[in-house]
Each structure stands twice: as C-alpha cells, then as structure tokens.
Amino acid sequence: IVSGFATLDNLDKQDDVVPSNASVSAFNRFRGNIREMHQPKAVGRMVSFKEDKFFDPATKKFYNGIYVSAYVSKGAQDTWEKVLDGTLTGFSIGGVINDAEKCYDEELGKSYQVIKDYDLSELSLVDNPANQLANVVSIQKVNNDAQNGGIIAKADLENLLRG
Image 1 (cartoon, helix red, strand yellow):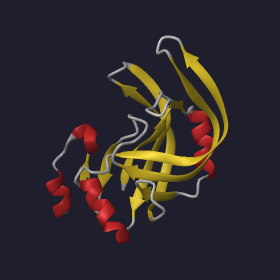
Image 2 (cartoon, helix red, strand yellow):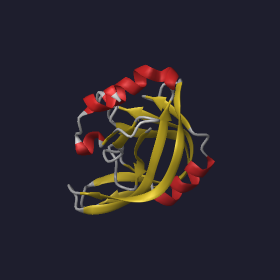
Image 3 (cartoon, helix red, strand yellow):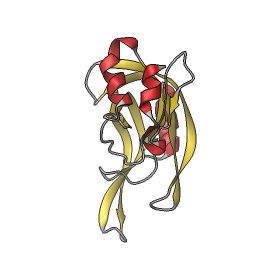
Image 4 (cartoon, one colour):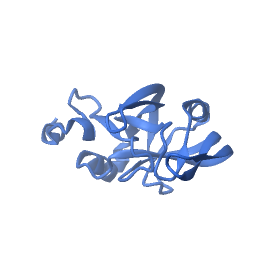
C-alpha cells in the first residue's frame, strides 16, 4: 500500500490550482485505477481517499487536498520496486477539465487556472509530480507491519524488503 497526497490546492508546476471540493467530487466518481507514469496500463487500485490538510514548511501555509492509499498489484512488481527504491516518489492525477477559471496573480506576475470541476480518469505513481506537494508519504507491505515514511521520513528500505 502506497499512501500520500494525490492533489492539493496549491499552485502547481503547470500553473493550475485544484480546490479540494472539486477533487472530492472527482474522486467520488473515480473508478480507482492506478497507473505508472500515466501509461495506459493499470498497476493497482485505489484503496481509500480522504480530504486532508498538509502544512508546507517552505511556504509556511496549510493546503487542502486528497490523501490516498493505493494497492500496487502483485502483477506490477516492477512498479513496486520503483516505489521501494525511491524512483516513483509522487502521485499525479489525470482527467478531463469540465469547468475552470483563468486568474492572474499580480504578486507572481503570471496567470493560472483554477479547476472548478473535473472528471478523474486515472491516478498515477510518478517520479516528478506536477504538484510538487503530491508526494508518497508512506509505504506499507501488505500482511506485514513494516512501514516506510517515504521521502518525508527517509526510513531504511532494506528492512521492508526483507519482511
């Protein structure tokens, strides 16, 4: 089981802001497919999601988002290995935007898009998420108590592999 934030309402690297109310609605309609790097191959299923808050120490701000737990299938051992070795460190959403508003931030001197409604078609484990805060927070081996704090805790993965 891989857990972390799938999306948050901060300004991401693609100049999008996805409010958590839009994400709650999209995740409620989501089929639960988990992919690797947005490729058209399922590697697992979403187990659960919840609305949650995240404190970003860099900006000293709280952001609202969707925290997910995803099961990586036994048939996707290569994906699981990439999660364990730190290659796949984040989550990324993919879908169709139904409603968005263009905005301009005077302080930043740039335009951005607020996504008000979208259909979520997939959730991917990725190496470089568009939302810089959408990171893997924990890794848990099923039927085993071994856990890793992901990129946040920098725990020893060797024990997880032996378990």
